Image (cartoon, rainbow, N blue to C red):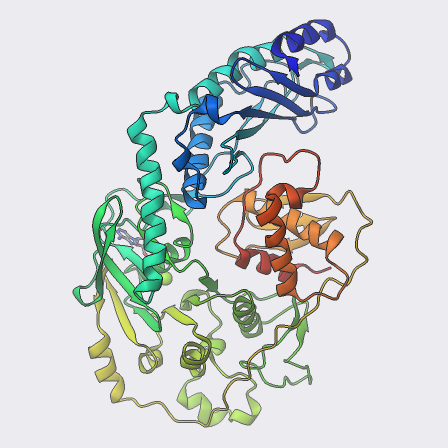
Length: 563
Ligand code: ADP
Ligand code: MG
């Protein structure tokens, strides 16, 4: 292998030449205790920065083996390294000068959630750490400024690497705490199953966020306390006994006056599919990790989805067993979102009345008297919610501030009162008894068929599909936009980029029109299980800037593609 000295020499030779001379730097170089690999060199100073990776062997890094031998610990450790690296690299970015992106040092910046990212991956078998970042190779105009690049590669980066990729750079206790938290979070996930819970929120948790656009905890918030009747206890392997509210499987209603914290609780439960970092306030808010937020999404496209359990024959004679539209209504979009979530394996639906289509949720008695069942294609969710649990095992956690009819259907009614939850099940049931529901005859739902075979496009071909993420809101692939605004459990732009890569993989490799959507997603996760994100990305080097989405969000993305 080439040595660091060779790179130094090379930089000396190409200084002040035309920018393309930088291409010669591509390759791997042995530094004292890591390998620097220049994976891809940018074409000019204004293009996307160059891709660089740093490889540190387990013997040099010295992290204890047991810290990366299972998936959740590894994810937590990788996340810790990225955060530290980001923090160290931030102050060096643009310290080396020049035109365009010269001197830029760009490292993934995790938010409050711990995600599997391409920025840092530890090999679970041999412990090798690969850290990926981007560097703007400096130029004056379009001339190589190798001295400035020398600063980055021989001063700045070594300092960042030294400070973040070796066990000795950390306080042992701090690393042990990160690992311990990940164990405890995993323990709660397993405990949910054992105790028959859909979700858990520990006493003392901080649920509200600092602002509408920040995922950080609110200062001086009212901390969460479980009602006594719902309190469960867990004996965590590290933190010891933890008490909090256990939301049982079944149907749970969250009620309460406006502004009393209903949506905030639901949002925390939505986020509980991910693990959060220490200090977030939601470290011990854990939700069944198949849970899906279901909302109305007017205007979305729907493809061959069997929404017949909610929507019968439509006025235009459209078939709702294979319902397709380029512009769904509130109710049809919410029905499609629900059926697709079932297809994606959701065991819990999270629904907020605020973002639901009223006619999907409910039809009051007066309306039923005036508009007869025969002329109303919609069977509202309230008529299916118990069936969904009893027959399909899908629990619902529903925020309902204004609709009391659900009292009849709920197993638990939780009232948020000045941010404090109270169990009002008995009182709600007693009151509901005075207002019996009109008993209509209801035909049981036909189990939806998940045999849709989408993506009948010619596979292969178009090798250079361009993928672009527009924040968390959308993805564009070959100029077609996939609207992800209302796929609310996407947590990071990097997940959107990865969704783009997955979609591209599907279009290029799995689009013979003979596979169901479930088979396609299974195949994607089989490839990832075997080869990691590299298996999907395909290019020679995996870039930084990708984060793994859940299976449920992959379904959501494929379902919204309008190709
Ligand atoms: P609702 O859905 O019941 O109308 P929200 O959940 O939207 O209410 O909360 C209303 C406001 O109260 C929000 O600004 C939120 O940040 C704030 N809030 C929620 N929970 C707490 C809490 N535990 N402590 C302090 N403020 C909170
Ligand atoms: Mg609300």
